[in-house]
Image (spheres, chains in turn red, orange):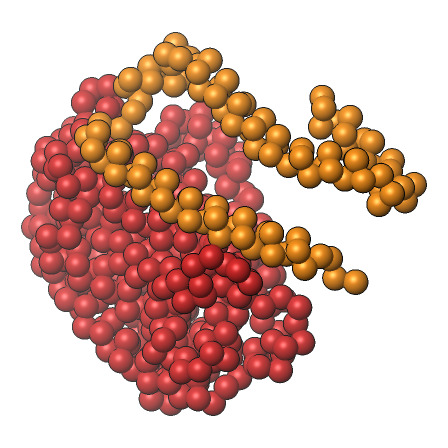
Length: 376
Length: 106
C-alpha cells in the first residue's frame, strides 16, 4: 500500500501525523495547566484532593501522547531529533525533569510515610505544569524563529550557543508562544474542572480562572500571531534546496494553502467562543468547545511550519543547515515501514477515547471519592 | 535460569496452597527482589560495553554519536538525576516499608 507512494508523499504524510499528534498533545496539556491551578482553585484539603483526582484519572493520557509524539518524530525525522535533543539540551531536560516528578507525585502524594510530605508532591505537580507547557511552547516557537546550530555533511550537528537551548528565552516571540501554551493549558484546565467536578465553590473559582487565563492566553496568542504573520520566514527553493529568508513567508503560507487558513480561523473562533462560554456563561460545555478549536489551530500551525517549501527547524547560524521535511526525514524504507505502524494510530486515539469515557461517566465529587478504592 | 526455577517452584507451592507454610521459600522470594534489578543492569552493561566502539555496528562510532555538549552540562545533569532519584528512591522504600508493615488487606 505505502510502497506505491513517492518519498515526498511519505514525508508529507509523516508531517501530517506529527502535526496531528502535536494538536492532541497541546489539547491534553490541560492536565498540566490544571496542576498549576491547584492552590488558586482549591481552598481546602478536600477540594485539592478533588482537583488532583480529577486530573489523576487523565494524566497518563498526556504522557502516552507525549511519548507517541516523541517516538513518531524520532522515527520519521531523526535529524530533527538528534539536532534538537542534543542541542536545545536544557529545554528538553527541564521538560524531562518536569515529567519525572509528575509521574511519581500522583502515586506518592496520599501515601503514608512518603518521605518529603504531600505538599512537596503538589509542588512537583505545579513544577511539571509550568515547565512542560512553557518550554514545549518555546521549542515549538523556534520552528518559526530558528535556532543556533550547524550540520555537517555527515549529518552531525553542532550547537553554537553554550546556553544549549536557553538562548531561546531571549526571543520575544518565543516567550509569547511559551506563555500562550501556558495560559491556554490553564484555561482548558479550569474548563476541565468546570466540566467534570461536581462542586459549586470549585466551579465558581474555575469559571473566574477561565476569564483571567483566557484573557492572558488571547493577549499572548495575538502578539505571537502578529509577529508570525509580519516577519520574514525560512523559505526553501524546491529545485536547489537552498534556504533563504522570505518576507511574510508564514502569511504567504496561509494564503497559498487556504484550507489551512480556514481551519486556523475556525479553530480560533471556537477557542474564543469556548472562553466566552466558560468564563462569562459558566457553561461546562466550554471545555469541548475550546478543545474543538485547539486541535485545528495547533494542527494548522504545524502545517504552516513544515509545508509549502518551508524549513520547519531553521538554523539562524547557517541557513543552509536548516531542517526541512525533505532533508531531515528517514529513508524511504523506514518511512514505509513506519507508515504501516502508523495505521495503529487510530488504536491510540481509540484507547484515549475509551479510557476517557470509562473514567468520566459521572462528575467527580466528595462522596464518589470516598466510595472509590484508589485516591491520589 | 534461577528465576525460572524459583518462579516454577513458587507457582507449584501457591497452587498446592503450601506457600504460607514454608517460611524459607518466602524469605528466598524477598531476597530475590534485588536480583531482578541486578540482572537488568548487568544486561545493559553487557550490551553497552560489548558494542564498543560502535553505536551502530560498522556505521556509527560512539564517539561520533554522542551529543557535542560541554562536560559541565553533563555533570550538572548527572548530579540532578542522582539527587532527584535518590530522594524518590528513599520515598519509595519508606512507602513500601510502611505498606509491608501494615500487611495485606483481609
